[in-house]
Length: 507
DNA sequence: TTCCGACAGTGGGGTCGCAAT
DNA sequence: ATTGCGACCCCACTATCGGAA
Image (cartoon, rainbow, N blue to C red; front, side):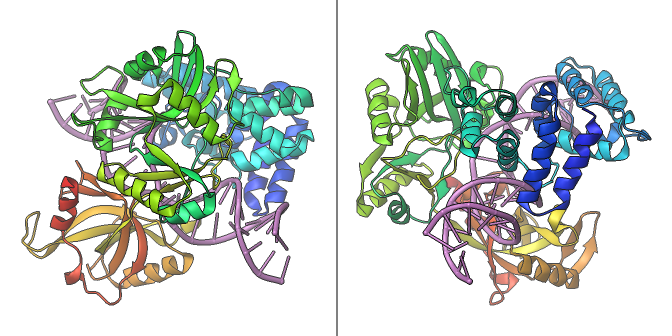
């Protein structure tokens, strides 16, 4: 199939807000597609090519972009082949070859094909159709139940191959897609609640478990063969030899475990997330050891546990890895849940995850059977600048630069402000419109994407905490900052201080 | 008719490896 | 040796659509 045909559909999908119309257009395209193009096309349409990221970002893309072709000639297979070549060149140190390959591809593309290819390589097509909508479209095109398609995609971890199976295979083949030890499944995710009690009201009797601040791991063991995957199914086995060794010693033959890995101090307390990531991100072994903790088991010795209630899965876990099961308690009592949460926080952990004891393991879903609860801190800060938004926020001032007061001038002018982070979260459309006007009134200067303002507007910011910053002058950065409200009742002289925020580092 | 679950979009801080400077 | 790029860890929140209630 010509790439042009796919791009026409993609543009049509982007041009409507109706999901039903998006699904209809995509389903129509999928029906017309040759089997050999289906997996590739699905990857392109959701800007997640089946090769994965091929090492081209905004910089490389703009550098390679030249005059477009007048007539469409590229096929879907051509693009797939080019992406494959780019991927293979990944570590070869041949930047010029990569650039040449990319230039060759874009030179053969028409203007709208170039835009499409850029969107795919940057991972943001913004057509309003990602996995969810594509899953519906695959179901529509194939006539299979959407639940069957979604289930196969989650268990195989591969929407493209699932599309091929749905469209060209039999219903039985689709339904037969199941857990395979060694092949990662999309992990179950958690919703959010404000308190353990609130979470418990939703779940009923629950396992209330510590939430550890590390990296999610999914561990597969088949005999002596162990593989480890991240939340997004990237394989990281070689980075975690200590976890491999641990899992090899478990009293099982085959197993799939879900858990978290993190660095610990001498007392067994968690090290800061940054330290875990420094070790997790490195190829070579470092002095830091990453410890595995598990909270779920999906398969054991030939027996799938996905559809077993959580209580049964916990029993299995308790039997095979009691020392490395994430701490928690099963309860229907809000007071007990609150106590477990307090204990978790006192031990330095993030909070708790409250899990309905009767629930199955819903791969890839963020339902209300798992609910995370973390404490929220709020501070009043001053807005130092604001950046113009993109996409649906184009033309609106969106991303706030936040400053804390420095009364003594420890990091600059006495009574001045020290930047501690940015945020674009928590803003309603009305607030975006308001701040776009207000900050232009307070403008003192302007750079390409940013309007700098008088430090006069006070905003209440919620954060999960702070972390050491190698970037900001105060040495501290906000973690997961979001706007709660503007504080018209406060002046800039009354905002929280950099010393207050730095104080959070030590606790 | 209203409600609500699922999705997509809009970006945040920080870490690494690797290539270019 | 330093800097910039790209990939990938962690992540919150709002708007919207359309099926469920």
